Length: 639
Image (cartoon, rainbow, N blue to C red; front, top):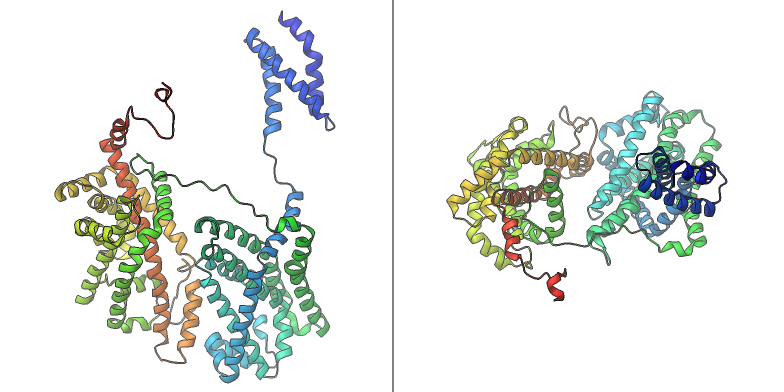
């Protein structure tokens, strides 16, 4: 057929298709039939009119339709409204027991503050500080007990308060991932403080005055802390009670549920900051009825959103209450060591190995290495007790110096630092043994048999790496970390390779040299990861500029340490020591969580370099060449 005849025969149909597709009220069935005819015409044109305009026209028309049908539509406002109407209330209803538990726990902590203040009127000084109590007493004497809310410009006050409230609420949630312990610590801290604060005003005969002033914004603020605690417990329970899931899968699901609740709190936290800055700021000028109205309206809104409405939705959609959106979890696959990896693959596989085999190497680390570390820290704290009585500019720098002793002020510091090299060796040996026995169940006999041959070589192989980290001050290490890749793979080679000792060491040096660029990038990315993970505990802006000064921005350890110091002040003059020991406890646990990951990256990098240099996986494949595969048929299987 001539091209002109082909066009004349079908142009009416194509024109009809274009108009029907572009109209808003088209018939889907007719459009589908026309589209099928269009694809047939396109196939004919591609066969007989390859270089003609009609083929280009039909191809563009078909492509436009295909793209329009398959493109991903943006999220609509209707879907967002549906989330607030149905999805979020159902998540709140499913977490109702955790929220109720958080509320009961918070009230108990408040009661502890009330009872303690009743029997010890000076207790508020422990939890709130002498400066704040003295200022409040002076304000009461001047006839304005809540003058603290008038001390700043309203806009700057709103920004500062809202930022702080968001930080506290999200910290309360995220700390819940650590078996819910952190959430309870923060709720205890805030609950005891609230109870002591309110009873302090009660003893001064100002309970109603303080209540009407504080709870204008406190109805949203305190409710947000309790609900954030419930969200944190929801997230943490996924790790504690995995049910039929793995702990990681359960934590992913529970974290998603908890995060939904947390995001719903943001408007209320912002509203609390606005009320505190613009309403509580002028509380003396407001009539009594308006204060009660704001408080009851605020609590009523909280009860409606987080109690009554979720119950209503759960009863309206009972079939959705037990329904959970579960992500398609990947089935575990055998871990393949021998393959050439990019930097991204090294890190991805390292995190995967950490997740899959933490239980195995973690038993060794927390049974052998952690007690040894605690003993060395106790020895250091006893010998350098005077240094624990100070507050430092960056506390983590000074605390690690005391714990590890790498400033070498005495012979004990040198011996303790050598002791820490053996702790690092135990951690590395546990990881490398897990790699060597990946298909075996945990066995102390197997581990000690491995250590008999490999522990000393691993210690020697890591000596250069550890010497740079422990021997250089942190401010020099920040600039000279480029030396680390030169020795990065020696320890892994000594722990994983099977050639004689001397050849292993030379091989490790050669691998480190060849892998320098990748190792450097891995180290940089690990440092970035550690810095991000450390922010809740050692925030970059948490800086004490002077003795007993407030940090620029408090982190979790600042709040916890401050609380511990205030309690310790009642029992000892060395209360600063208690706060620093609390910090040390978290730093050592963080150390034992990160170092195994470093060891894994060295092991994965070692296997990548082995496969690159020796083509080990290719040789392994040749050995299997011609053999039957249990999982895949070959033509020979049918002969």
